[in-house]
Length: 228
Image (cartoon, rainbow, N blue to C red):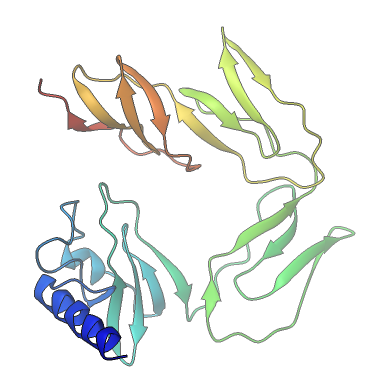
């Protein structure tokens, strides 16, 4: 028992020396060993709307706790678009076309005979609205530079100018998104951000990539160069 207690004390001292914590007030990592990625400017965190109680600053999630703002401490290589995750104000009711089940941020709503019927739960806080189920397949509409596309049911690949898709039959549909874009990789680039995912480069080609689906793509760029 005494040995376990001693180990816990040593571990606590190491945390204090490093300055790292899972939750920090206001902004990212403090102290050595916390990571070397891109930090979110304090000005971006302070853009959190007054009616927002949980905020994604492009890297970390920040929430109010006992009157203070606390953020997670992820080390991010690039910063995404900030957005409010939980708000005190009810969002506009705006389900996508072909949606038949919709979460309006508080209640689940179903499209029945052309009219929306929603549960009647009272909420003080509201999450981001989202379609939970589609009826007819979503419109097949990949962007101009898209090479691989999730049509809401199947994964499709552009080959010799024609789209080839798997033929799984779906009763419900995801939100369509491009999962691989056509890119121009700079010479000697080792790690590349294609506008959505981060990829490792081998022999000038994208080989191993993260698998995040993105509705909108950012500016592609090389994140790390090979100097040898």
